[in-house]
Amino acid sequence: MDSLLSLLNVSLNYHTKQKETLAVKDLSFDVSSGEFAAIIGPSGCGKTSILSLIAGLIKGYGGDVFFDGEKLLKPSEKIGYMLQRDELFPWLTISENVYLPLKIKRLYNKENKDLADELIKKYGLIDFCDFYPNQLSGGMRQRAALIRTLAASPELLLLDEPFSALDYQTRLVVCNDVHGIIKSENKTALLVTHDISEAVSLSDKIIVLTQRPAKVKNCYILDFDKDLTPIERRESDRFSQWFETLWRDLN
Ligand SMILES: Nc1ncnc2c1ncn2[C@@H]1O[C@H](COP(=O)(O)OP(=O)(O)OP(=O)(O)O)[C@@H](O)[C@H]1O
Ligand SMILES: [Mg+2]
Image 1 (cartoon, rainbow, N blue to C red):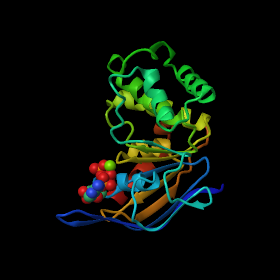
Image 2: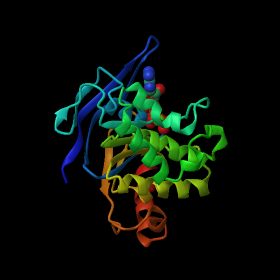
Image 3: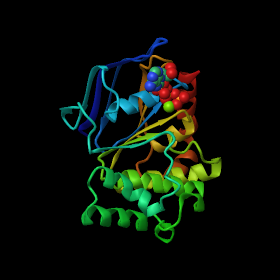
Image 4: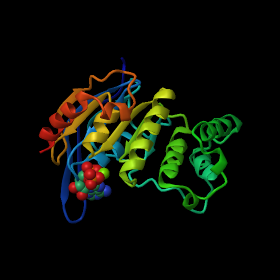
């Protein structure tokens, strides 16, 4: 597999009036095209900072980020970012929420609108496209937020704790859904989570970070059968073995 994203010796230092915070230090990892990668690490270690940096929202970091063979110097249209608290706008309908990034990026044309509508239909929200977010369940809102991110046809999806607002049962189902959507749309994903089970159930690769400043502590390629869904993975023997390995790393 080709490497779609590479971070090489990346460091990030936040300067505020009060103090300096070294959030990331000498961080290197790769994500291959088509891979579902997860970053796990302790709270506050720098995970969101890393995604924001890849999204091109942070300037003045050390080291290099390469995307699709080129040095990443500004936000790329090919990278979609689903934020840690990715709220839909309550005053817009589901469709309007999904179209919004296209409109902001001036990509709102017939072709892209059709693609967005296709995604809304394919992933079960067609009957709710004129509803407002508060008229949907938490899981449906999460799906709408993902569709919104997918509608701009990114190659790489950055997902920051996308399921953290959901209760356990819903989370299992939505995880399964989202994994299915990303795989069937042939996307590459980089997920941030501090939930070990979630990382093990979803990922091809897991990057474990140290306490802040974030460095790579370990990187694992998971050896599950390719066709297993996240829920099926949870039922397999290898699941608890991976869980233990990662648990030991984090504690
Ligand atoms: N804009 C900012 N200005 C200054 N410091 C920041 C900024 N954003 C984050 N930090 C600091 O950088 C460190 C890493 O923060 P970050 O949000 O990346 O962690 P995280 O791993 O995503 O945490 P969590 O698991 O709680 O989401 C923290 O110490 C935080 O206070
Ligand atoms: Mg975070």
